[in-house]
Image (cartoon, rainbow, N blue to C red; front, side, top):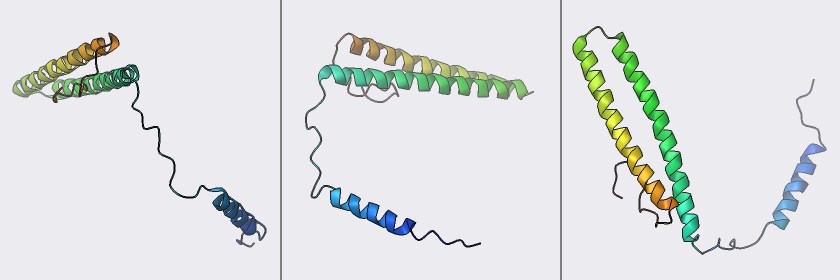
Length: 126
């Protein structure tokens, strides 16, 4: 049994590639549209990013809470259980603050306000 490629396949592939090379544009590609999207489109894009961030954060918080619950349920040391509960409560408060800020930004965007500079709600500057 031979492992060689059929002889007719190689010239066919080379001819196809040569044809593509002949039809490829020469020189630099034309620049993309140099205009900025309209303010309404920018607001819609920011709103979509905010919704996505809110969903991802909710999913991560759910996972983190379940992880903390699992640790607390498996520990027999009351001090460790209290530490885990305290950490979980602190994370919950931080999560609620982020989501509240994002929701406020989302309401502003949906009501036509200019998009906040950084409205990811990650605790950074706005």
